[in-house]
Image (tube, rainbow, N blue to C red; front, side, top):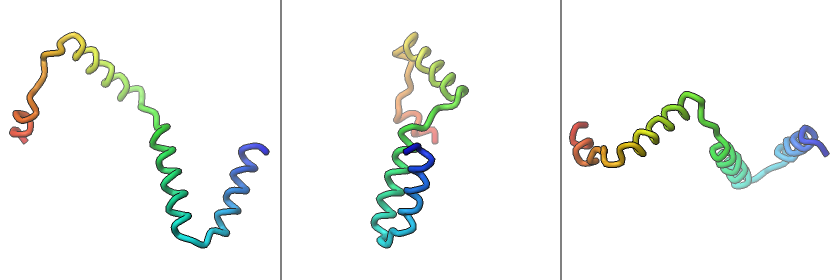
Amino acid sequence: MDLEARKYNFIQELFSVDRESIMDTLERVLKKEKEEHQELSASTKKVLDERLESYKKNPNDLLDWEDVKGDW
């Protein structure tokens, strides 16, 4: 059975669900799956790579959390 047919069958099964706990579980699984496979945008990846490279070049160039927190 191909993916489209499986999705259709799954949707049909959803119509027969009569317990909210089952729907809660299915929604939780789908949300977790989406979060685990979420891709970073190219611009976000670039910023993270730049920050990681900066840290590698200057590992001691850090800010103390208590000082930063005090500025807010």
